[in-house]
Image (cartoon, rainbow, N blue to C red; front, top):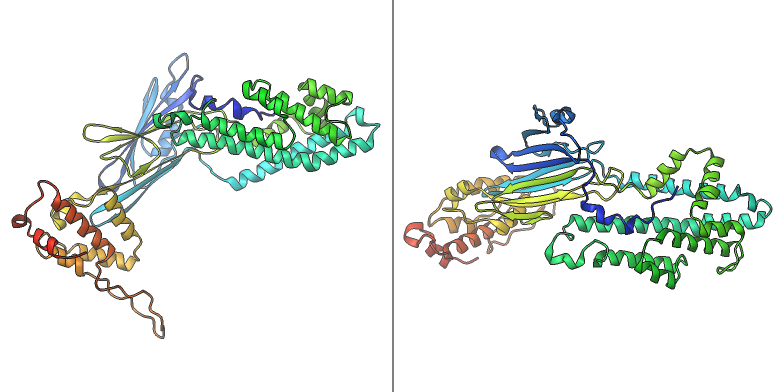
Length: 488
């Protein structure tokens, strides 16, 4: 059985592939009244010769949404509203997504933060334990195969030298090589998830073979292999032009190092059994791996499972499209913004890897929603939006519960008119009560000549709004003279 250590060079073009039969999920979300999120899912099966009924997924959808799906001969749909925790509704042999919408509200607006992971479990600690156990098993199999090799039976000293090399230098190199592969492949997937593959501005940095990012990871791997003696410069030059012989070339490098460990020249001649490994990659299975696992009493399935942990199954699962309908583009996101006439849509498209593969894809976005009714009633019009509103909400979120309550009560007393600016400029929090016998104040004194940060943000927003074309004049607003005469 051949470990799939060459996948870094071949699998990236499959990131967007979807030619095999697969599930197709289209999820649409929007914010609705009462702070809820409406989520609609449409499921279908693509790539099959005949339509697949939605009955296949109806029980899962029913359990996830708590309502009845609409089942069709060629698919299914379901819709419900959620407060914060979104349903686990995307499957690839098991649930592979978890989503949340988090909110923070203050007088004047709300910030929303959406996150969804396209894999059910993200546990690097458990994965690392599996990984090191699988590497240990691989080394044990190699050692057992070498110990059982008939052509080394009469050379115990050479056999012991080779086993010591496997236990030390080769084990260290195997760990480093597989970590480099996983890290490099994970880097490529993460960049694809961030949009490097599809963003026209970044097209020259494509992750596909020939793109700068893929070439960077290949160069990094080759330099490590050159450093460790598994490649020679002339071999690296050939692989840069044609990677078809990547595995065979690496095996030749490993055979050279094994020959040196046995006391032979790196350039040969080699013992016959090493020569067979060098010229026939299948001999590794027949002469080392199979006898090794047999000596350890392991099944082929155990061997495959071990190598799949070291180099997991990077095949891709369902095709997923997620859409958020929003009034304005979020302040930050990793999707694709598609503007419309009155609103826009934030879109992600994904084909999540199987649960044991890595890394998971995480979708995120955060945006703010001004409370237009509140701002009109208390500030005269909607003045705080976008990044300033986010900054104000971040300040509000950082207050203690007592101070948030005090600010909210104060903000509820604000009204448009000539007193508004003075109220915002002079408001201060009440001092925190001191514990008996406490000589040190619990809060630093607030300088009396500066408004609070939240008040300053509202003041700046009011100033900006009154400078805009069409802003109400002093006669109608009663605030412009005050704004011009008051400081910070």
